[in-house]
Length: 144
Length: 144
DNA sequence: CTAACTATACTTAGTTG
DNA sequence: GCAACTAAGTATAGTTA
Image 1: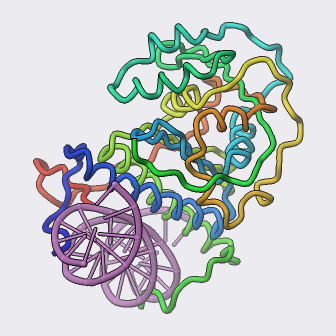
Image 2: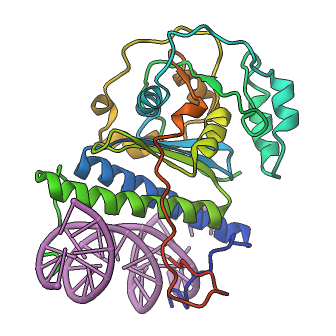
């Protein structure tokens, strides 16, 4: 029982296993972040794109992420730059991996958003809008 | 030798100890992210504000962070809200449950904020060096 | 599929140089 | 102060229900 040998540092081939592993590791990561933050008084955030449901898992919370990102970006009293790409551009260029298909479908729901495709564009003005925090939704099943 | 009892979930009072703990935990966190990413093909990023040198430690790299942030989304043209919410306000036990907001929610939650990500932010990033492998090179073990 | 379990691998607090 | 060490504590692969 339990693990037989060290796991090699490769992508877990089996999808179901990978999914389970993701859930466990993702949870573990959040805990680690939590502790780091508490023990050492650290401001931090993490954004994880769940490949199984194409959603973002964030730590500590959306407003918390936003707070760190603000500090990270040190921004803008700057003029808004308009070299944002539109959705179509994004969805076309953004396809790199199979799972992006799901992601793209999600994006398609968001009609009035602009995105910058960072992979191809080094010009990185990124703007983020924020909203009020609600009570966080309960964990949703990761199932596809 | 070694630890006497469980560490309480509090801020480490002693500054030197805290610093050491930060270094260790920060390193550990980066490794966890790395593994999560590799094992499960996950797109992710983390931004850690090092309280001891006021720099940002990022994973996987500044462009990598930028890439994820871009996907994370940012509705254009909104004024930045000057006062972000205090991290502590949101950092409670509900943290874990904050995960799994859907993409749309994430975008909406980021409605008030602007930030700029530019290349000159890249200087203060600390690269976490890979840890030594004690096993055979073929294995690329970094096992878990 | 999810949850619980548990042996093992990994992480890290405390120690030492 | 940092790096190496080591055992206590934690995370998780594989198993079971």
